Length: 121
Image (tube, rainbow, N blue to C red; front, side, top):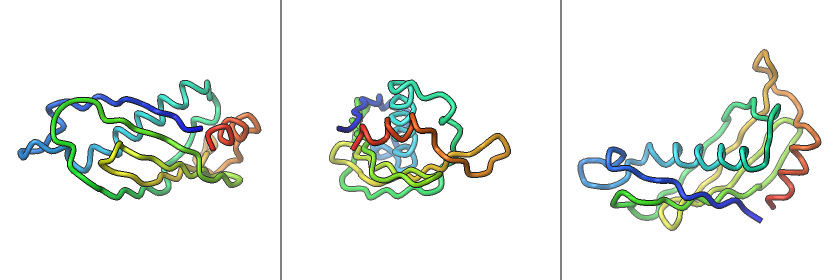
């Protein structure tokens, strides 16, 4: 199972050539991941830091509209989680997050989070 999000792309996100600027793709992935967490009802495990972000661009997104974003769970460790993403046929990649405690140190995921994560595989 994966999570699907329709992320609105606005005119002000396009570069002078009318193409969605490459720096905006992570914003849309972040919005999709936030929507996923809201959908799952995750609370305490929302304290995380992004450790890694990898994007491969395939084709240009050339007008305001809806960018489809799909999020999938790839693997989970004691404190980290790797999510794959696909932004339609425009870009794909992965994002690694690390759960952190109040002091910003890595912390273990809750059992509830692990179950929710496995449900996205």
